[in-house]
Image (cartoon, rainbow, N blue to C red):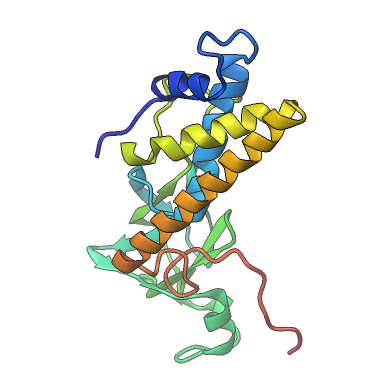
Amino acid sequence: MATSTLAAMSPQVGDRLQDPTFIFWNEQFEVWAGLAEGINELLLMIGRPTQIFNETITIESNTVWQTMPSGVLALTNLNVNGSQLKKTTLRALDYTQSSWSSAWQSDRAPVPARWAPVGLGMFIVHPAPVQPIFAQATGIAYPFTDTWPPAGTDVSPFEKNLDQALEMYAASYARVKEIGQDFQEGLELYKRFQQIGQRYSVIQDRRDDLVWTQSFGAPTAPSQVSKR
């Protein structure tokens, strides 16, 4: 679907701020930055952008611990030699142990059979390959990799029907420096942004409810196990 640049959404934010020529608000440092932050927050709320990562990566040998590819928020699939590796969790590796022992970190094989996310910076392959191998990785890419502030040419990873929500967020972001009525109006815009994100998540969950689940997504919550 068609997407918008930050510069294309900027005039609508100016209208919401009643400052279309950006005399009071700085377009790059406040409006574009607000749009970028709104995109980041919406990505965490929905987890289904149109922008994805799909590249060949190298799986290092003799270690189950692998570093996340640069620019990737979360992996969704790994394919080796045309076969998709089964996705599991660190908890399953530690506790399920269906065909491996508690020393699974030392297991080796020509090709891994499964993989698991570990936070946002690493992932696991098991067993570890005895030689470096190539894998086709698919995942969710970070929407911005530039240094702050963002450029107006940066593109939203969401379809255009979410531009309105992002414009609300940016207007709310810009009003943070205000007090009184302006600040309260900003809070109302932020609530509306959250409501749109929530509704969109419900709709998308009907299509795919496994994006952020413990088995198939990229869980970031701490383990609920309190004792061993």
